Image 1 (cartoon, helix red, strand yellow):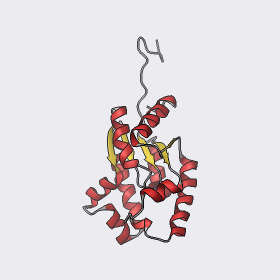
Image 2 (image 1 turned 60 degrees about the vertical axis):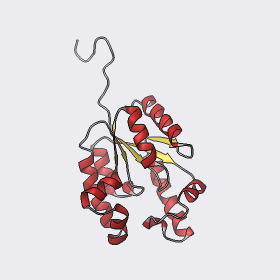
Image 3 (image 1 turned 180 degrees about the vertical axis):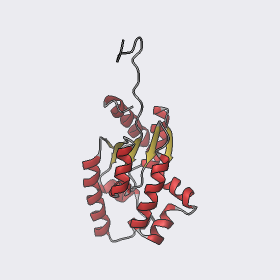
Image 4 (image 1 turned 120 degrees about the horizontal axis):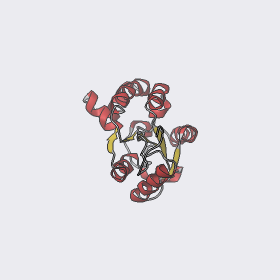
Length: 182
C-alpha cells in the first residue's frame, strides 16, 4: 500500500516551535514547560547567544547595538535549529530581523506568539535593566506597538500569555496539537 500506514497513525515530523513575544511575555518561563509537555528539548536563544559569544546577551546588545546583535543572534539561531523536536524562546526582537525570519522559514519553524497587553508588560518589566527597556515610556510603548503588529502578522499560533506559565504552556500545547504542528 503506497502512501498509507497500517495500524496506528503515523506521526508527521515535528516542526520546531519558536516562541515569540515582547520582553516580559514569558518566553523563557513558558518554553521549558511547553518543551516538557511536548517531549521536546528547550533552548533560550539569549542564553545560547551568551554562551556562543561568551558574553551576556544584554551586554552584547548594549555594547554593539541592535543591528550587530541581531546578526549574531541569526548565526546562533541557524545552529540551534539543527536540532529536532525543539522549543526555542526567541529574543523579543529576533523576528524583526529579515535574515532570522528566513532561517525560521527554512527550518519550517512554527512561530507561536505569547501575546501580552501593555499593562502586563509594564508591570512585569518594572525596574528592568534590559537595554531596550531603558528609553522613555513613549519609546517603550512605540517599540511594543511596532513589535506587536509584527508578531500578529507572523504568528501561526497565538496564546494569551497574561495567565500563569503552566496555563499558558497547556494552552500552547493544546493549540499546537489542534493545528497539527506537533
